[in-house]
Image (cartoon, rainbow, N blue to C red; front, side, top):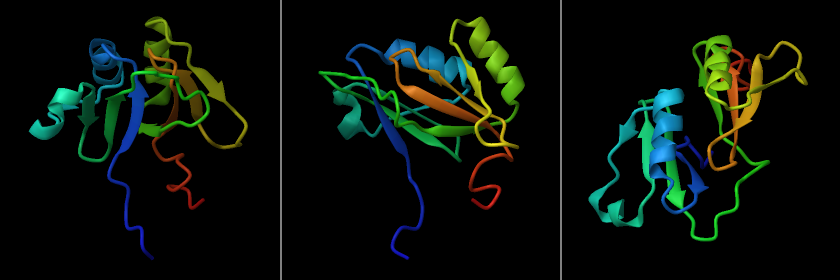
Length: 128
């Protein structure tokens, strides 16, 4: 086997989106911001991570949101987080397509699709 793990996921955002990213990914989703390496700081964007997950948001001048491709995050309490997101104006939609899985989708402040899954219901966690 050549691939041994996943280091990070990068998604794009428009120039100047750092504060909105911090409010959404840091504030609402609870991912702490991590400092980018000095050599990359001049590019803009921001990184988040918690030891298990690392998400990089990079600036794309001609930004187009990813409305199909997406990261899928495992969350501690999907019901609580989805209520919090809905209260903040983000429309979390529960997805019941796969029986026995608690999961759903929403769009970040830039229009990128994000999937949230109840911890324990992930496809890798359940052997799929």
